[in-house]
Length: 216
Image 1 (cartoon, rainbow, N blue to C red):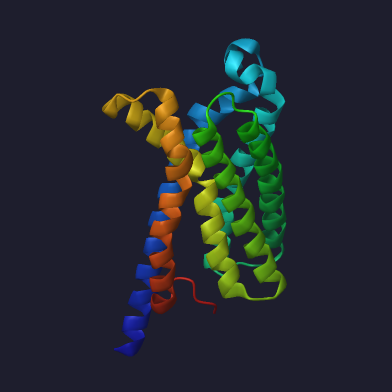
Image 2 (tube, one colour):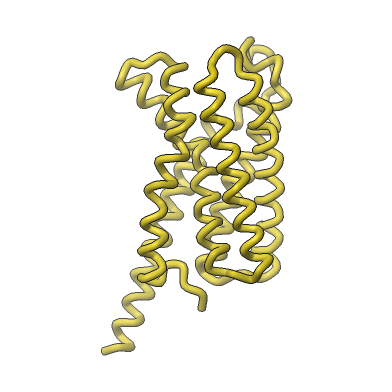
């Protein structure tokens, strides 16, 4: 019975991983296809007067963010299924490099937002959270602490996924609550990463007990 229960537990764990990561991948693909890819058409008409003077910063931000968004899903799958060979390490370096590029450009964009200190502060805090969580993941694996590395990577990817949450949230607040785009963006500049991080933390703690992040 113990062997049967162990097999059933592994199957259940695998199913949850597939469900969670699959859902994240679908949402990420929606965001990349509908919201991010248009910015690779670098024209005045596409960027508009708000972003055109800062177009190169935005392009770097989007390019790095999209790369981190896609590579991060693969990294989480490889790490949680203990496929941590050369491919995982190569993708890890790609992810960290993409975060560095996008985060640096994000600071620039936040500090050059005209006339909205609260919005700028939210985006700045997001970039700080992104840099801290990713750095902690790197430091953990350098110390060969695989469990902490996985947990910090989860936190880092939650901040990365803030790209998607931000867009969903802004669209919802504008469409269903009748907010102005600026008010919605200001709220989601904080809510897109702070709320998911708070919700993730108890799941990480429970995951330690249930073996979701266990090192085998």
